[in-house]
Length: 128
Image 1 (tube, rainbow, N blue to C red):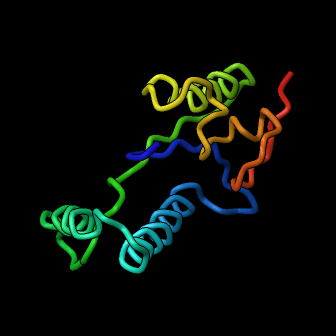
Image 2 (cartoon, rainbow, N blue to C red; image 1 turned 60 degrees about the vertical axis):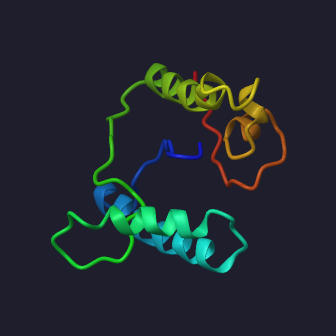
């Protein structure tokens, strides 16, 4: 999606999910700003100003803020819940009328589940 991201993820090997999300946001924020700054992008000035304005309320010094604070983690305890979340994620671009079929959205794991080419590394969940 152009304005948000959905992830079904798990912290392993002693990592804590909140730390993983913090590091993910920090790394991707820097890469997003770097890419906007270095690549030809007609909305460059608008986007960078938008990310700068998002810092106005912050107590600590920060030049750009790409992600909202927090994240909406939910505990996954059943296969039914996993299937529900995967279906929601895959159908989000369809609901927003970006594509007709979930696998048509290039940046979706729906392409992986449909055995189509994708630049995303995805672990396909086999559920019973």
